[in-house]
Image (cartoon, rainbow, N blue to C red; front, top):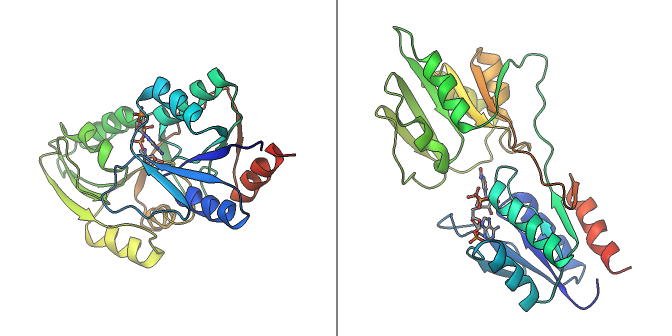
Length: 253
Ligand code: NAP
């Protein structure tokens, strides 16, 4: 690894897990969080919080802190940070790895309507809401994506978020503040008690929040699934923290 440290771009459970493994292995690492969540679960080891100031800021930070490798373990939908990491790593020739949990794959009982981005999800819900009975939507895409649904007056939204949304909201909604993991019984009860017709989710992947998809399938609830954004061509991608540890160790050999 040379004499430098690893920058671990985080904000996910996988990033926290990887930070723990690298610290235990005695590998110098600094985790980075965007600073969006009020009370974040912090990884062990050194942590910095806040944006770098675009690609130029990140390049300067990598130089100043003598970073010898970058692991981008951000959420699969944190596209800007991922693109900035790729651009900065390419400019400096710094090795780059993405750690991405595998996306959810549909089970036989699942019936998902795949959409390319959050705008397409909102348009899909808008079309479905055009019914005399009204549409009841369970929105689990995160607080930054709620505003995309703010024009939809014909649907009612149950909006589940960690921190309250700050942007525009759809006129008819209820905010439910909670943080996963969620189990199947609770997800089934929540959707049934709220008379949910449609679940809107990003394809985040991971077991901690998959139960909502199983519950939706059991209850015959339609799922609007936002597909992941494309990944940059720079760097490699792995799906497990152990593969990421191997990659980091390989930098020094
Ligand atoms: P984003 O749109 O990809 O990034 C926007 C800006 O936020 C970046 O340009 C960067 O600012 C800053 N940033 C993002 N991640 C950072 C990090 N780990 N460390 C330092 N700065 C970071 O990001 P986002 O989608 O808002 O996600 C923000 C954070 O929440 C990420 O850490 C991500 O892993 C986590 N998260 C995101 C989602 C999601 O659905 N998007 C879900 C769960 C968790 P500068 O340009 O100033 O460097």
